[in-house]
Length: 277
Length: 300
Image 1: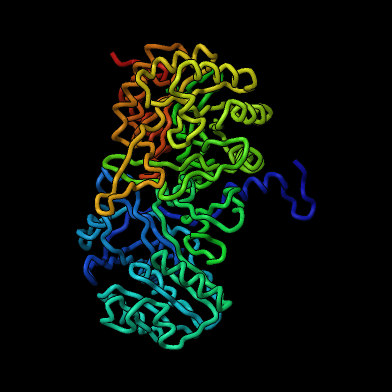
Image 2: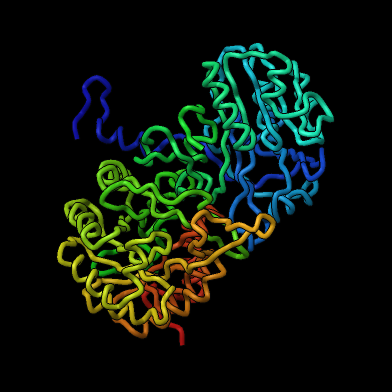
């Protein structure tokens, strides 16, 4: 071991310490449900008291929510809809997709859940005229981003039919709607709404179903706009160890050493041009 | 109270290790678990070159278990040596490297590369159900098990553990073949091949159609196979399959395992490996067991 003259510390020892004592950024917490309500058909809004997660979370990150039923082993990855750092709380808005989320939806204030987070990278915030685009159950994570982004922003939200969270987005800027049945806003998808309203932007942040993200990637390429998309995939560990939730990447990924990126770790938010789906 | 385990001349501070493929090379879980507390970290399988693995979806949950068909995605031995071994060397735990390949030559190439590396043991994956060549193809025929074991032993500088598949008529036959080929130990069970169908979409849930089943639902099968294997071979057994807690680990040890690997449970509880070490210690204290060796195969 060599002594570093300028700092008086052992160089090799320091390197080891730095690696070993990497700052903790993910936390396992038993959290209490503060309140829960159904805000649309099968879509629930749940506030959780999660001190450490709320302190570290960023827009676009997600948490792993664990079932209280031992027959369901895998955590459910759910995006963070809102972060309240004053009340040390996070809000999850999720759709019932199976038995795990059905279990969560039946829980009341005061009941407890195990949560690990915050996970993933979150959105990279740019100071440019922005589109915040959400489709279906991809809408919730855009709310925290809408709160945090301090620039000209247009929110474009796509629904099948029933609206949710729309009023809450309106507090942060102009909201444009698209519905598949035409019951509100533009009849069609989010790109139809952008075109119908003649909207433009310099950066896109989006979360939603793969066909929507694919269309936005193409739109961004045609218009030369920076485009950030939040991806999803079935996960197991949620922290980058199991390699279940990969997506194809344009270039070789530094960690995997192949053209795969871990959605839970390198993502869920990617520059659209970096991923292939 | 002694929890130390001697495994083919390697002393583990306790019998708890991670199951290959569930724990990466330890880096991700080190935020939740003190790796210094584990007997060993068994790494994700590594091949001679990087592997892309299978298409997604790669996992599905089933009642009391899960299916996976990752397809042995791995960064290849070069990056593994450069990045993952130095990471694990920072910790006071043993390093067991899981090795995979499509052909005997590919396995041997990795084993040769690892010969000069500071790793403690090798676990040879001849039981992965999710790749077309290699993997399980070697593990379902006793002649091939014996041959590949003998070939690997020629080049291995570290003790060799052969990881066995439960997808066979008689696992003891494979264990005996590994022993005859010179294996220093066997580990079992790898996952049981399963399938899940989405009835609403009438589609396979996994892109690979089939996947390896793990989790608590397979634990009794694993305990039975460890017990049978313990009656059949003299080399040590590393028991795994659905261990969720210390009770499950102790059951496996009583069935004849000298050490245990914890896999799927990491996904349910990231701190589980450390908790299992503590739970085994508590059990030993409760039953006045002075040495963990007293428990190995102690079922009557």
